[in-house]
Length: 447
Image (cartoon, rainbow, N blue to C red; front, side, top):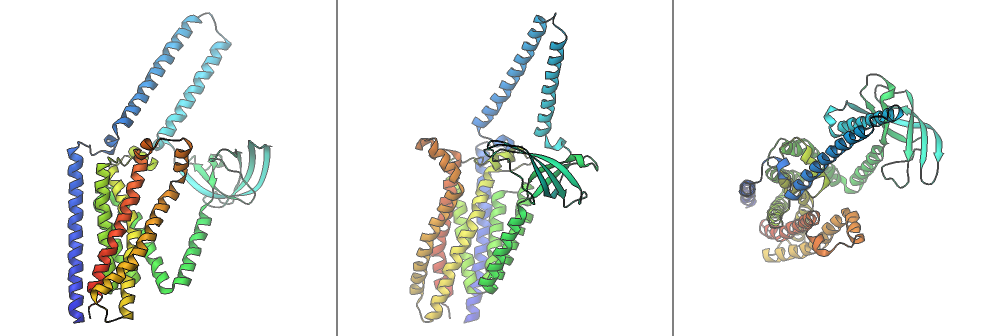
């Protein structure tokens, strides 16, 4: 009976979801107990590896010793130059004033909260003058029209310094759109400076072309894909990340979010039917497998979570964050796309096979799904590895250029983290193939 099969499918799906939530809670409790057993403090500031803390403490001690040495040298210099006054005193005072000024500027940079409010506006270069131009250095004076904000329509003069060998400088051209920053100094134009080149319009154009071609070539499915993509971005920015910033467990939040996104994305794209239900169950199993394997591998590989510069910057954020948990949360969310792709591919193949041969037996349907899944598995594994290698190309070139020994490379936290990330995601969709094939053979072959 079709109704009986649908009821069984709903009951099985509900059971799998409840099991997923139970397993998620178990993973979270296991992670918390493991961290407590290792006496890891809750505060992310205390979770820095010992060698980094020693380096920080050594740098502070060195700075204090330098300050003491400078003070002793200053006293000796004053004792030895009691009879010398005038220009020497004035020059020394000027040097001290400059050092003090530099110190205060450095203090302002180190404490962003003390800085005045900054506002960003658009501008357009309407005229340009090259004050000095050479192959190594170029000085420019540009007249810029402010095109947004309270100063819209005003024209200002800005100076720009460009060095071809410096990646943080850029050369201005007439008609170029730029981003201006205004330090909050009231209503004075003197507080507006050149910040960067405007890049967002090119990004918006690229996104628009992608959406256009997705709808033209994908039809209704392409339009549904746009809806799911927009919802995924909204969910991550407005729900997942804020919950993590509020102190919730990154692993728990990421697993629950992944399950919610899997269900909504596949239901919207494939509709409410057996095929989407099978793909959902297979994808959930793959994502949970990737999360469990990442946690186990991260434990035995002693991954810290501080492998990237962004994670290290989170140390200075006044939030109680589980940096190591963020590593596994990122792996789970990163596995979602690849695993969902494999799950829906195998389920769609099973549906097509069944439509061509309605009388196919369940073992034959499972075998056909496995054949399709093996092809997807082979290509997707290369795709995952190549994606991570492409993102790490500068790092790999740096390692090869410095002729770093293999023992040092493989034991670096950054390299180990990327290897664990790519391998666990690969394991996720490897598990998804047989699970989805078996589920498809059982549910889709019901009359």
